[in-house]
Amino acid sequence: MMKKLVLVAVVATALSGCATDDPNQKAKTGAAVGAAAGALLGYAVDDGAGGVLAGAAVGALAGGGVGHYMDKQQQEMEAALADEQARHELEIQQLENETLKIDISNEVSFDFDSAALKSAFTPTLSKVADILQRYPNTIIHVVGHTDSVGSESYNMRLSERRAQSVVDFFLSRGVVSDRLYAMGRGETEPRATNETEAGRQLNRRVEIYVKPVVEGQESEAYQAP
Image (cartoon, rainbow, N blue to C red; front, side, top):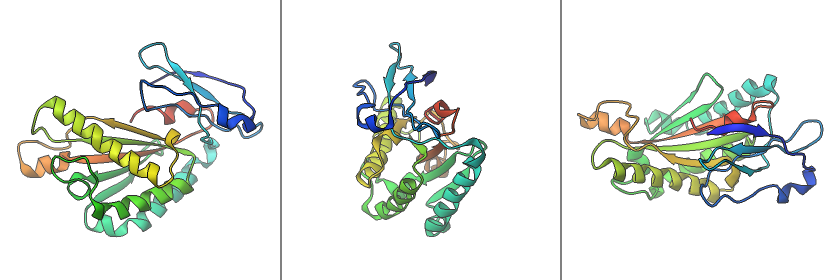
């Protein structure tokens, strides 16, 4: 979770030297390119041990243009994924804070008790990845969920592995790592009852949150949904 914002004055040509590795977590905070100076921002992330500083080449959007930017991205998603939506394989919606949310059923994306993406579903994720690349001023959070069958610890690990599988696929399609965050919620956030098969099916899912990086509010994009 973002704790505080630290401004780092860096020349844009020094971009390759801005990132620092954090061995304790994959999630790293990014940097926003200033409109006037092309400077990079660094962010301090509260990692439970005082925070770490990291940077990434993720541009910030001027506040007034965020809605249009995210509306266009949603329109492209809706058009590209119309068939999948008609088959109820996924849902796309825009949340109040301009974040796009893509809700994917595990039944179409993973086999039972597996974190390996189904080959039949990778063309769908390829469409998503291609659009994400065309809209680089965003941070992508992939969140895995399970039903309550099995132990809580096992379900947490499975949800984490499935989220990471989606992130790894996006990486393979050229989405830069500093924009991608994977996390698992296990069985802790059910959408429906786990007492019925229909409810358990709704609870087994992967959610993709696409959050805009807004100038002056950059830290919010990196906060977990």
